[in-house]
Image (cartoon, rainbow, N blue to C red; front, side):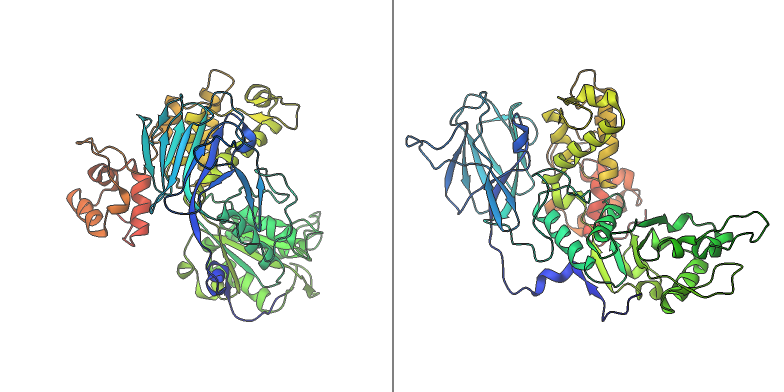
Amino acid sequence: MSSEGDTLDTRDEDEGRGTEVELRPALIVLHAAEARLVGAALLFARRGEAKVLGRGERDPDDRHPRALPVFQRPGKNEPAGAFADPYLSREQLVVTATSSGVRVENVGKRDLLDARGNVVSAVELSPGDVCEVRGRLLLLATTRAAVMPAARSFGRPQHAFGEPDPHGLVGESPVAWKLRDSAAFVAARSAHLLLLGESGTGKEVVAQTVHDLSGKKGKKMVSRNAATLPAGIIDAELFGHVANYPNAGMPERPGLIGEADGSTLFLDEIGEISHELSTRLLRVLDERGEYQRLGDARVRTSSFRLVGATNRPVAALKADVAARFRLRLSVPPLEERKEDVPLIARALLRRAAAKDAEIGERFLEGWNGRTGEPRLSIELVRALVTHGYTTHVRELDLLLWTSLAASTGDTADLGPEVLAELGGEGSEGSEAGEGSDAGDRVDVRKLTAEDVRAALDRVGGVHEKAWRELGLANRHVLKRLVKKLGLREDG
């Protein structure tokens, strides 16, 4: 059992590094005819610099320097190779870095589409905006360091770019790599760990990562949803019982505490545990792992590490429970790592195919039972990236399955069924949508707490009416906005 120093919150660990990383405009490949480039970055050095994006390598006759994709990983940029898609012009786009993002001008033969799918000659993109070279290339504007900061705790990557790492985490964004590095840091400590994050963000995968990277990886992690532990038999669930107890013929049962000896005990939804369960669990933690099985006078000791997970804020947890977790790690929502959404969708489709041969044979090119190239339409990827998630990877998986079930061809597509699940967002790239009474688009970033509060007052606090009143895309956008502005969520 652990007794390490004061609480360490890895959410704030970067603030004390003493160095600032300069961020610059960048475009991330979300979808391309060349699937190997999904997740690659196009970097722009300074305001006013123009680069040409198109097919082929650099050429002395190019009017501007050529933007070539790179695979960014901590401490290293690896050339990804030039675009080779024959349907892209050699000079397709001229991209100019601006003070707020990039300006993308179409100089090629294929149409340029803005975030709403309209054909444009040029478009200004801020971080989070998307644009498309019709049917061939989908790009997300963001900011990136010239070189991603080196990892301090996570070792050298052992997995191919864009693929799940050995622990199941997917993503090549700076946010994803910071999560891996933080997980490696806490894994090297023995203190109990609290994972914080919204529902569906992948807290169990992070728990598995921490377990795999710890000294306890030789034993299987023991997982249980704390909210499902039956109230009447909590002692038996936690501590187990000896053979023939309480009735003759009953087999011996180690209980969660005994089963996790020398390993990790992961309790999801720990914020929902009952007073009875918290009392029993805290007693074991306070007594350095000492416990007794039911029907047994012998005192046993279990050397386990507790990893709890909750979607509640720390302040909402029972104070005595929160105090036992000296390490805390936040799992980011998809909104903070939009460029990872296509990679996660591809991984989810491959996982589905591994369990369902029909899915693999139909939706993965070259499927051989283990590997294959997922076929996702550019329209679907655009919609998945720009969607406002509430249950994150769980919701992404639902949207993907909705597409698979409704698609009539061999490509997962954006059909009416997916649009219905998206709440009518379509493939628009803004978090704003059209209101019920007006067609104006709303810039969510300009909405104030007073604006939202006034709209809620006008509709009696009913959120289902308020998001339409504000002209938002759906109720999920309103929910995130209320949370961001620190407003009460009741109503």
